[in-house]
Amino acid sequence: MRTTARRAMGALALATAAAIVLAACGSDSKDKGGDKAAGDSGSKTVTLVSHDSFAASKSVLAEFTKETGYTVKVLRGGDAGAAVNQAILTKDHPRGDVFFGVDNTLLSRALDNGLFTPYTAKDLGQVPAGLQLDAGKHRVTPIDSGAVCVNYDRGYFTAHHLAPPQSFADLVKPAYKNLLVTENVSTSSPGLAFLLGTAATYGDGGWQGYWKQLKSNGVEVVDSWEQAYNDRFSGSSAGKQAKGDRPLVVSYASSPPAEVVGVTPEPAQSPVGVATGTCFQQIEFAGLLHGAKNTAGGQALIDFMLGKAFQEDMPLQMYVDPVRKDAALPPVFTKYGATVDHPATMPPDKIAADRDDWVGSWNSIVLK
Image (cartoon, rainbow, N blue to C red; front, top):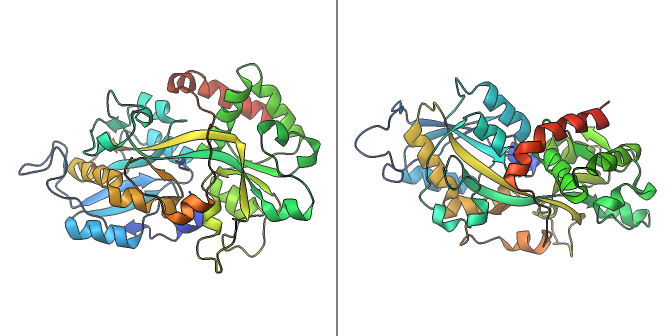
């Protein structure tokens, strides 16, 4: 996820401290033991590079700290798209040891640029084969999944006696003019996932015409998920004094629970709904950065992120689905999150072949 942006609820993520103490068990990864792994500096600090929405609970981090001895420093770099671009620009001198947040929309770009060193996480057998998009080489490890979808502010549509949209086709109707905000596909993984959803729905010859209609219908474009959801979306409760004026936003099928957590009494439904006919499947990965100074610590961190404690912590921290088959979801997540039975998907080789051309065409159509 995210993208994971996957990708996650930015307000909760920003509450997490910039430096997080984690740990790594000396017997949990392949290259740990009596001798240092090749390229391992021997440092007890491991650096995680990620997007702004990375978060983990203090109790889970404390559990890991108790078991191990590494300190993890978290470096956040904007939305997932921007973070991936920055990692590519700095690949010869990586800023950290592990990168988390590259998703299936950008995976081929990261792999083609040689960002990662292969590593097989110890619990990878708990992950369904369909989520292991680099299974043959193990350069990245699946960490979470989710669906990028248009979310809507229930209160707005009730007050205006208007049925919320449910499909891509609905979004270009006059009734929804000037209501949607989405993210820039060049800097945001949810924005790119939304573009791929339209390409999967309308095909190579149809998605450009669809976006021309969407532009004519007043779609607003901002740089990041945080800006779209927290600042421009009228249904967000991210602690802002002035609400945005857009009742439709590109976010996640799992966004609604975030608007309910901590609310007393518990409402019958979330104030945020999901247009389930606008969804695209997203998978977020972590990988050991090529040239990492602390390979053993990085491997241990990937093992931890695929471990059950972290996987079961993620839903209410980053509002994404765990990839482990045996990970339980919290009741509030299952009660209020939307069920998307058939999200749009696209083969990785198709994304790799056409993504850059589509992004260029999108920029010409939407941002001119």
